[in-house]
Image (cartoon, rainbow, N blue to C red; front, side, top):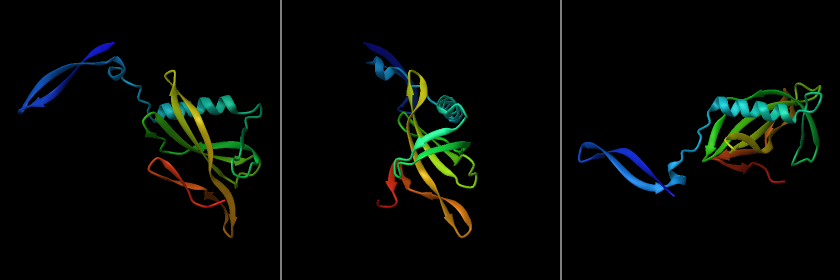
Length: 152
């Protein structure tokens, strides 16, 4: 099935309308999501996965520790990574340990017109220094790809 696509183009210094037949899949525009959409999707996700006490549970993929945490905030900016992948970074602290902060990353993708979380990962873990707790990074981003900072 095809659709008629028209667009304005410059031809020899004059603006002209171009028309061509294109597959319908190309003609259909994908939904663009904005910062408020990403934050709203994150809010819906977190509300859906919080336990009955309002805590977020996650098994750390490195330490295999079962974390029970309290939500603190979504960082700004949230962003589109590439294509249809969106990203939000958040802070949580273990229940009763407000000074120990985990930075948790979430990747989202559209499903049936709505953004859904497809991946969750501990980005930074709490470490103690002479000056108190800080968030120690496990990886960084090179473009949209993860680059691990330390070998296991």
